[in-house]
Length: 352
Image (cartoon, rainbow, N blue to C red; front, side, top):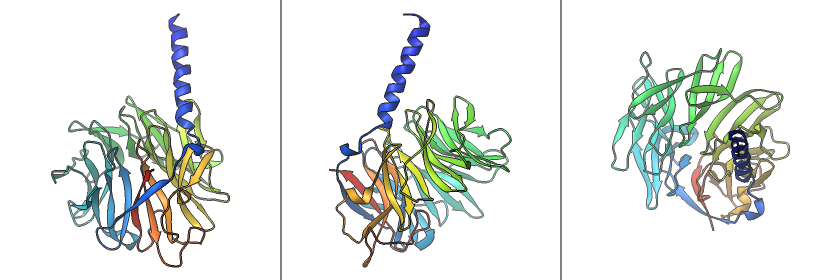
């Protein structure tokens, strides 16, 4: 076999693997047990990540995100991580239990790391800047985020400046996989565009047809990227691959807002999709196969899961939800996935 035919065969096999990752039949989905992880303070909480051990991180505070503290949850309950100042949020956790997040420090904000030993440390910043944010961490402990106006990666104690797309003046990294590939958004006067940074090169991922801007939220180890694309007809969730480019994910009929927030290495995607009755937590098992997670849990009828934000390779999902008298899953609710209704809790969904 020639080198060219070997390369072609490898590409074909890679394509088949990708297709398998993109197609997980809805029929294969099972019901989930659901656990309320509660809140630390203020009666409201939101969640950002879950690792393969089922450890969860996010933030808890008062309604609409005020006076918030980062938290870490594992079997046994929530732990307040404190912060560099009086407000903090935890955004990601790896399987070693390393947590990264962002906290205020006087007149600015800084990225931080936290370990299970209770060691909370401020991350360094790019020269000439005075702020940073840490949004994602991979298995090697590489951290993706931003310092000043540029996306960066903290790698083995050093800062790598990822730059920005051509003609863009700023960027921010939102996700990093175990291959060191980074995704995020780069901004210019013409708008925002999702990017993929790999092997020292940043490239734009474009937008869905008819849209003007996009943002990437996460990338898995197969290089599948998820996020949202925005235009006159609203905001729509997408999945991107090298082979197929950017594809829309199915949405609730009539939806003008959907967004993909989490993806695992099986290719399952979670996020939110809105309709006339508000947003609902969604699971996509292929670009055209979507299911409302509220239909797969046995929680009380007054519980509504409004958004799902992360999924691990075991299929465990973390989501926001509200549980109020006189509320039902088919009733209109005026909360949304970002500014939270009073009493918003974090829920862990585990496949039966």
